[in-house]
Length: 348
Image (tube, rainbow, N blue to C red; front, top):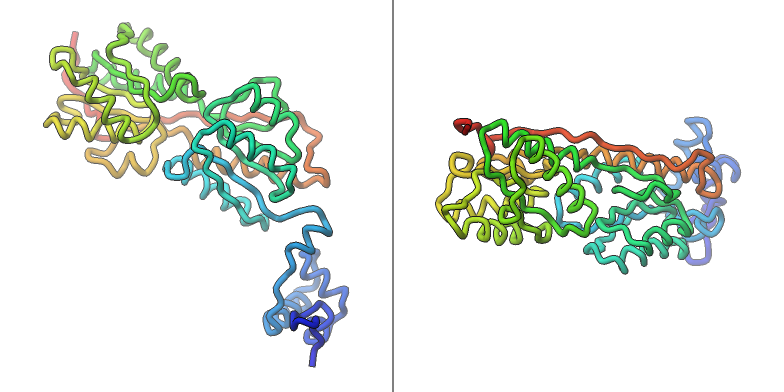
């Protein structure tokens, strides 16, 4: 009978006896260090028959690794971050890591706490997606106890890998498209202007309006948060006066765009015949609405996947650092045209 610990838990000794291999061979297989295929099969079969469960705590104490990574995002219910989660997990799971999820609700103190928690060694590294970057963020990133990758824009002198979206160019793509389809009174529903995405989308909107020879009208711009209900409330403000009604609404994300569409439907206005609607992110919501929503794809899946790859590359060295300087990549935007912005007669 193979020997076990006093509590009945199989040991590498009992597995070695069952598999008829050396203790060293069992250790190599269980620690993923490689062995002959027949040895691996015998050890894995013996471990399964004995009900062996690896002691993750002991392994963590031995090599200083938890085999866990964290992804902190502003809103776990936003399809953009769901797409990122799937992309990050596909990479990290293949590398043998579990992915812990944390929704910060875009609260700065919560984001700072997650950054500082790397010192607790509850995870080996962090991917974080803040929508505001404060001086406190910069300091926490500079002094983080483990490797961090930021999905978003950072000041150039922050020594952290980052993966960005070009939402300035993305917003401009949407506005130019609306202009090309004949719209001239283009409204803008944006998120908070003190956030990175809110600021960049505003810049792209203003730039494209000027390029198209259109006047930026404060009465056609609403700043709110990034939710569906906020989009509906913003549309009600824009539609309060029929005489000044916009013929198109560009929204800073798809959730806002769905809220705008809901308000338009409730008033009996047709999309796109009366008012065209375009969003950003090209999330699942863009295809779920009716009519399907024109949206700017900001590469959520690609950004998530690349952020995970950068983090794993940092972790491949013993101290979690990398000889290369911090790296920054940008996902190019892509306009996905659907029925919500079908062309109308071009106005003079």
